[in-house]
Amino acid sequence: MTATTSTHTPPASLHTPVIGWFEQHARDLPWRRPEAGAWGVMVSEFMLQQTPVSRVLPVYEQWVARWPRPADLAADAPGEAVRAWGRLGYPRRALRLHGAAQAITERHGGDVPSGHNQLLALPGIGEYTAAAVASFAYGQRHAVLDTNVRRVFARAAAGIQYPPNATTAAERKLARALLPEEDERAARWAAATMELGALVCTAKNEDCSKCPISGQCAWLLAGKPAHQGPPRRGQTYAGTDRQVRGRLLAVLRETVAPVGQSALDAVWDEPVQRARALDGLVADGLVEPLADGQYRLPLT
DNA sequence: CAATCGTGGCC
DNA sequence: TGGCCAAGATT
Image (cartoon, rainbow, N blue to C red; front, side, top):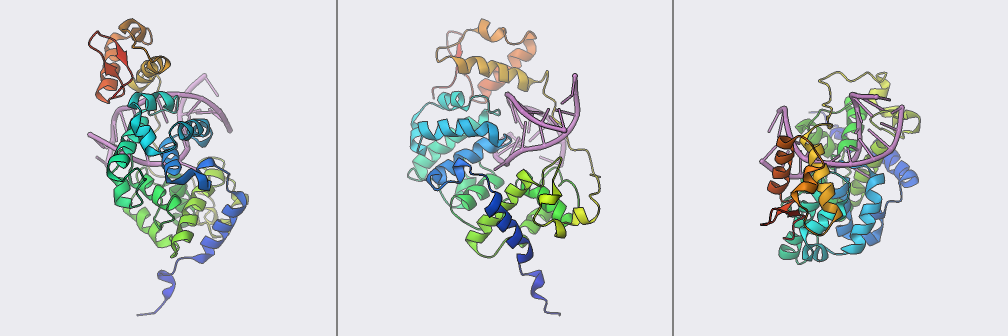
């Protein structure tokens, strides 16, 4: 067997330019500052799930000021988390973050756990977020596969414009193979590839002239062929239950006092869909029905 | 595995 | 104008 070590040696030819670019161009985001701590990192990761940085920034500042430790959030009502979530979208994330804070308080002495499996066991934390917190907050070596990193790898390594709709085993394998050996450098690499995807190797209007690895990008070298596979599923919104749920919850966020049926009926004229949406919010624990027929954000 | 789950800005 | 996209998780 030919003893080429290259197969098992992480490509420093990629690491060095990408990490170097990151050191020059990384945004100064509050959750990247040392004072953010693991809790700040975790709060930011929940908020950043499917929501742009620009919209997260002000809400993040309010959250960590109001609830500086997991126990502070755990001691407050889940409805307060939903209210403070504001218009970030996907409000179940607020509920799950509150639940995660409770679990951290009860099971981990109030400190965000550092183990990948411990993180995975918390509500609202999946494969990506567990790896992100372990990597960014604790400097561990994990493959951090978010939409940005997946796109960068799809282009640079696979030579295609967009990654598959769902993360594949091949992507995980590739991400692990590309991981630098040393923990801190691996964590740096994770943040750097993510930032590269967010700022340069974007979904649309990518700027290859600013890319530190354009000379090694399989997609660019192939002439940037257009996306082939199945169309990436667009998300309709107007007229859906999601829109109705959003309107209902917006009413409930405005006031601490319980809200009557009539105030909720005013947000949507179709009664069947309106009732279904409200039932869904109650089932999700986002809304609490009271005995007198009124509704409010959950106190417990 | 595919559907569901918010919201707003941009080209 | 409207489809597309944004640091996913859950069922």
